[in-house]
Length: 541
Ligand code: CFN
Ligand code: HCA
Image (cartoon, rainbow, N blue to C red):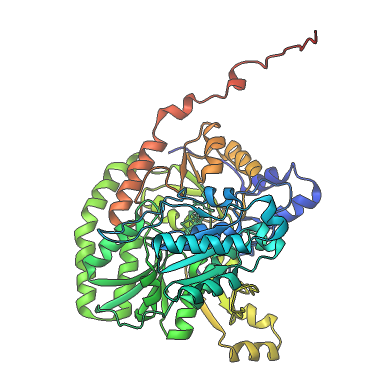
């Protein structure tokens, strides 16, 4: 394997060198040399703060987090974007969240619904147009629910999507209509949109179906969005183990799944960042506890299944889970054996939203690859540190005011920062401390952790550390490939997947082997690297 000689502190200095002093000072707090270990408190990283204007961030907007991420993958709700057509169009099917409606199931995923706001709607208000759009969707499809998503101009001109939704819901009587104040500018990233979506779906939908659900071991799978069919593979494994998945939030999900989530015995949280609010609300309101799981990586999948079995504490389930693992693992191990000698020692950089940088680190570890630098676009400190403090979150009915979670490196430090009176008030409100894995404790010491990586730093990092593989999204894809480094999209999986579960892990190993061992990248040279700049004189005649 290739030996890379570098001092992470020098790399950090290099990354900051070009910035004006004020920008450098701010960015310095979001770039960290990892020192975390399982037992030590990790150093603080600044996360979930506004991107400095002028910097080309990798982040998306609050509308994207609400409409695209959380509500988008549900197949039988008509999702109407109230806004200019671009917002609806660009959030339409690019995330590769797959659906299988079965023989007669409804599926509105192939449709893009929008009010197509025009100048006159901005000037005179768009509520009438929204009302007409809801009516049209109802007349055409008679869906169980219609959801309305606010884009930036809606908040700026003051259209009341909630009032319009209430009016239409009352008028129809047999269709649940509700809105989301998820204007793009509302938060510093997608993350605020997750929170808004979680609150509304819990307020307007969860618990609606009172009919009990059958199953011996009933779980909800929270934070799994069926990208590239991941959810199908996880469902296959759960079914094989005899575990009933009542509701997935929200890959290939239906209205009825959300409405029945309160019938589960346990919530299993896959992407904590995007759905922890629902996990917590299910616990508070219905007493359903939650555990953190990760189905990315074969070992992580086995560990997660055992964790679920442990919760139910039934020897029959424990045996079944162990049998399934024993049946699935040989194929995985054979694939690793074949591939690992070609991938071991290679280096990767992972920069994805709010949980995958962490989850995919497990898959690369199975291939013997080392993550030398990683970070989230919009993760909070709990996602980095793997611990969090949850004071009771208070929001109004329409989720317009959101109090973010307060995060500290350790419960003790959190307590030390509060006055006794503040602490008492929080404890009365049901203060809870949780522990789970995070990015920092899972990465090696000395790896470089960067929050909200931007275009400039991405290219600089690649230039300085020359990784064997760079993982991020579509905006980064081509600029990285042009530097001669293979690039794998960990959002959409390019055209691949599933990568979750046992079969998914094998798919991933093969894909990574193909990428990091292809000779083609070493032939990549940009035209200006080969040929001197052309000069021309423009003559005006
Ligand atoms: S599917 Fe998830 S796993 S939901 Fe979240 S934090 Fe995004 S859309 Mo892109 S791939 Fe990414 Fe995560 Fe959770 Fe996806 S890492 S950025 S908002 N994400
Ligand atoms: C989003 C969706 C996104 C974008 C992916 C990308 C996704 O943030 O709105 O930049 O390639 O996974 O589709 O994260």
